[in-house]
Length: 410
Image 1 (spheres, helix red, strand yellow):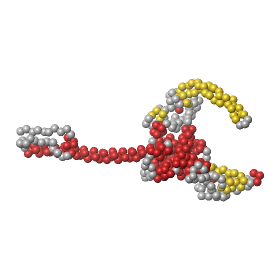
Image 2: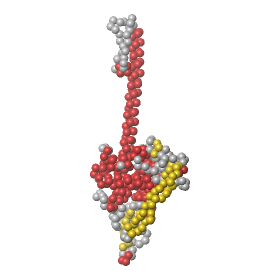
Image 3: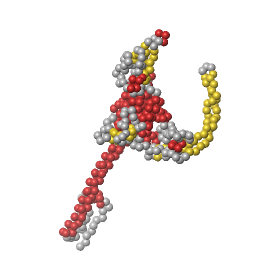
């Protein structure tokens, strides 16, 4: 008795159809016992393959679900990064914009230009505040993009100063009459009161304490700038509650509050012979350098947070750490040391950076160079010297070459 078994090049595919690949020539005889044995073996193989197939389908579903979540987070991260790096680009490349951000992109081009100007203002201030640190707020896209994907203290400062810059630029444009959508803030309340404005400690300090005065002039319309900054920068994250979103929204708001809640009051006297019989007062934004200094202090004292049990808020990582208020910056990931180049974290390293050999601070060669040492060389630099005032009204200077000692990190 002979038995021939056909060869199969794709056993998995054939087994899924439930076809037995064991056949016999016509006229051959197989005992019932052997037939049952062959059928049992084939059924066992099909059962194993069926289980493996079901497991593969479940795994595929989990993988697809994970990829969907990752793609959603990546797309939201891309949108957020574009807002910080180039707000004009987000309107050109992102087709699925909805809500208030879409309205700004499609219906308010002049406002979009002011938003882009505000991003530049925030970037310049960031570079000034971190000019002597290992991370110097670089604008290189490949580095900044990696930085913004993480919730470090540096990311928190970038988001806060950018939101503040947008608020500042839009408010200034309203005051200067560059936007048709808004005008300067004209309050009509008289006497020692703020009308419908919410009082804060800073507002109380800036109000006139003596004599009669009234609101007038053309104050900074920070209410409009605050609203448009929030509409554009917070729009992609409003309906989400993960820790990254909560941290970003908190820091964005802290940046805007650094302007709105620290407005000052300026007054002008009116009366005969310069007497200050009546004063007209208006609200004015703080200098943006003061805003940067305030946010830099918040950066130095930033608190690390973790998700709370309710899934919609955050708490500080340590029980002894003071809970952050609205003006404080927060973060959820530790920062890299930024000593060496790292593509994953966006660090460019400190090699070649200038340092101060006599300083013990963050700009000192010991800290800035991460203990690698530094090189000293003498260079010649051109400076303006022997300046003279000429009537009228011109200042002329000569160009002089001076020797200067420069220390650079190894």
